[in-house]
Image (cartoon, rainbow, N blue to C red; front, side, top):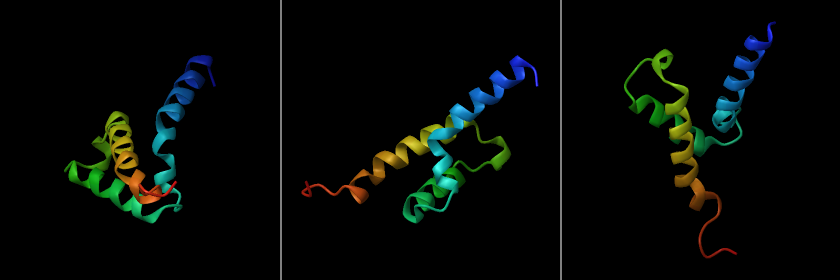
Length: 74
């Protein structure tokens, strides 16, 4: 593998990390919200961009904060 190809692979890996957990079965409620938002884009999965997945992951993480860390519990 050339250094350029390796660099591209590492870049893609880094870009995918924020939402990698949504595919590993650790968190049903968050996975459901994540997948619904992806489906709401209304396009084939092959056309979904890394940027869109990152935006969805960030939005879902923000939305689920109170689910995992309810206010009033401290």
